[in-house]
Length: 304
Image (cartoon, rainbow, N blue to C red; front, side):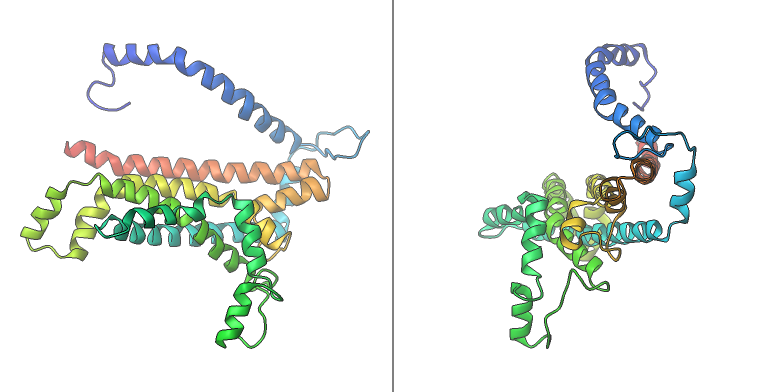
């Protein structure tokens, strides 16, 4: 809580009154999320395996040492970062552009808004399997269309080709998650007062100037929330990559890598180390985004 009255007796009394209401939530989070997290961190320091009758032994940071020296781990890190940066950037740009179009007064705007939400409403597993069939190199509708149009001469194995697999997953994620960015951007646009644009038009400010000098600064807080949620979601991507490409090293994310060692190789200790490393990366990114948001908000509070 910030502002002139943050340290006043009334503000302190409000915080004390809120604590009993927050306590059940805090306890629930500690039980549901805190204990499994601590258990995973502990297992990452052991040689635990799923084989029956084998007691885990403490090995310290040996799993992390091997993890940091494993080329496949760094390949998974690269895939995850490329996926997160590219998909979130495309979804943000497309989301704002589509939101600007849907914010205009036009016939059928309500139907377009409802249709726009369909990809986001489809469960990720269903959407991934649907695109998996559509992109199949032998009987997928995408290849049939490309062959009929003469774009390609032979069927393309989009999800099996190491050069195309990651970009195919990115394209499917952009199709799936862009409506989320549209929804938050459109909600922010709906709150902007018309008087600002009327004044800008009188001052002779063009459409591009109005967007960069008025619209974008005003919707930036909502946009930052959307980008933060999508970035965190993209960094822990699993289902989309696993269904489309399996355990392919060309497109495996850090979550896929951790799952492979936990389940396929039954190496609980090493898989837990990979999962813990992923958690630390996401926690670090979250902290950076929160700090960046506070730094951007500080000048605005000083102006007030």
